[in-house]
Picture 1 (cartoon, one colour):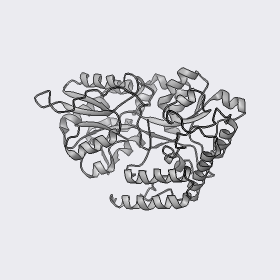
Picture 2 (cartoon, helix red, strand yellow; picture 1 turned 135 degrees about the horizontal axis):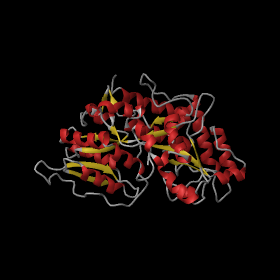
Picture 3 (cartoon, one colour; picture 1 turned 60 degrees about the vertical axis):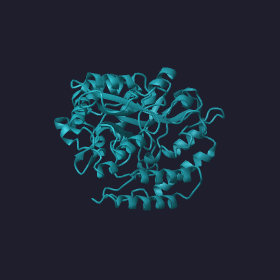
Picture 4 (cartoon, one colour; picture 1 turned 90 degrees about the horizontal axis):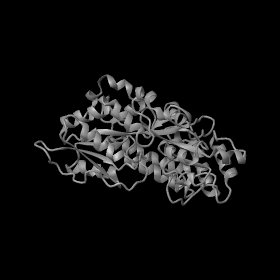
Length: 409
């Protein structure tokens, strides 16, 4: 899943591939390549197959459930990290500043202009590229066409319309809207800024969210949370379409990856929308992100870089297979999008188009984990606890300003 930082996997119980993560197996030792545990059928096996096809051989793939990002971060600090690893939206600014990841700029060559620019920019610092995007995912709003038609509701274009639609679609056992069990506090951070005409950071790297227009959106979210119109306490959270498929909610915030399961269950009885506009200066928006392939600067750097270049730059056939063979994702390379047949028509095409039409990178590179935690906790206090939005936003800004001081321009 894509979360406030994210990923693309639905929850799954697949065993990790390649449980032995120790070096060895060859004269120079196998390259270790780490991935988070993908839930889509066939995905773990595909990664192992790609590694097996590598002409130079000697690549051992491992996939891990649970808190994968923390596992990688700890391994890099301890000196026992993998040679190659994927990371949500590319390596963090702390990894880059600490010299933990290798510069991959020279791997791109002429292909650099083919990658979705905003996606590649998210993995770039001071003009140097530290992650190669593997695939693109986006979050979006899905709605049940028949339920909206029966209630005389049109797909919402503004936050006020979303609130009204949730009320009109609330039929007791069927709730109007599902934004996750936290009421959206842990997943809607970006769209509540962009849809109101603001952003995490300004172009000159200052907090960009302390504004009454953002507060208006947060008050509306608090109102939704207390309205009784939201589905809360679902067995699965927002990234899983189970509640929507089961008819427990008429609208749900989820992701592109969920659409095949929804289509299999509901046929054409659903549509997709971006998050609606907030206020007169806002516009619709969706977040998009990608796992990015990175190289451990303390590992077998040159061999690792060659493998990353082979898989994520040169082998466009495997990149296309990865994008649409296991779930539904948008290729990170623009030239591959027309070749992605699953995205060519209908609601899948509408969903994929949101990336280019109203999409924003999930978070900026300089939005550190501490900033992310402060903001997420503030949203929770406002949406679920009823705290004053402007006071909370100012507190977050003070944290963000201190974090930004660590990375002078």
